Image (tube, rainbow, N blue to C red; front, side):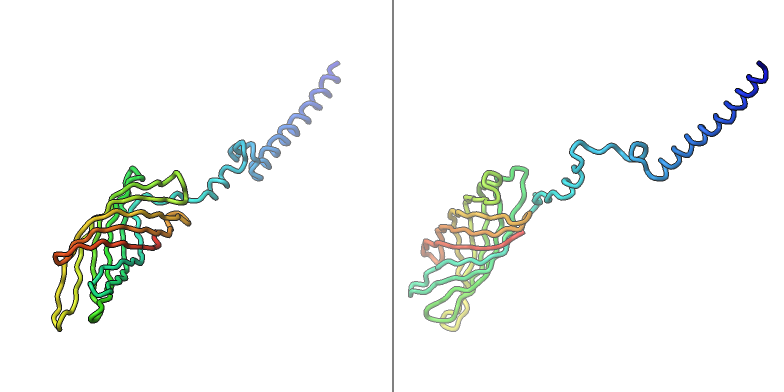
Length: 211
C-alpha cells in the first residue's frame, strides 16, 4: 500500500509542472501574437465603421466665403453707349442661421462712352437676403435686396471728372456647390440708380466662382 502511494505521488508530481508550463507557454504566445481576445478592442457590429468615417466627405466650412466674378450692365450715356464690364470680389459673412444671406461686393471696370474713351467705374454694394441652403442641395437659390454706390471717372473735354451714383434694387441668383465650399454662381438684378441728377434703370448680370 505504501509502495502504491509513493508511485502515485511520483506520477502526480511529474504531471503537474508539465501542465503548468504548457499553460504559461500558451499565454505567452497569445500575448506575443497580439491575440485579439486579449489585446485588441472588440470590433463594432458593422466591422467597417472606422473605415466609413474616414472616407466620409468633410462638411462645408461655415465661416466667411469669397467669390470672384464678372459683371455686366448698361449705364446709358445718352448716345447709345454705356456698356459696362466689371471684375468683382465679394465676401459672404457666415451666420448661425445659414438661410440669412449677407454679402459685401467691390467691383471695378470700364464703361463704353460713345463720344470718347472708356470711363472708369468703381462700385461697392451690400447684399441682404434669404437663401435655401439645404432644401435643393447642391443647388442654392437666393433672393436679396441690394444697396449700392460708386463713381464714374471720365474725361470730358480734356478734363477729368467724377460722377457719383447710388441706388438700390433686388437680385435673384443661385449657386451650385461642387466640392465643399467650391461653387459656381450666377445672378441677375434690377437696380434703380441716380447719377448727376438723372435716373437710370439698370439690369445687371453677374457670374462667378468662389470658395
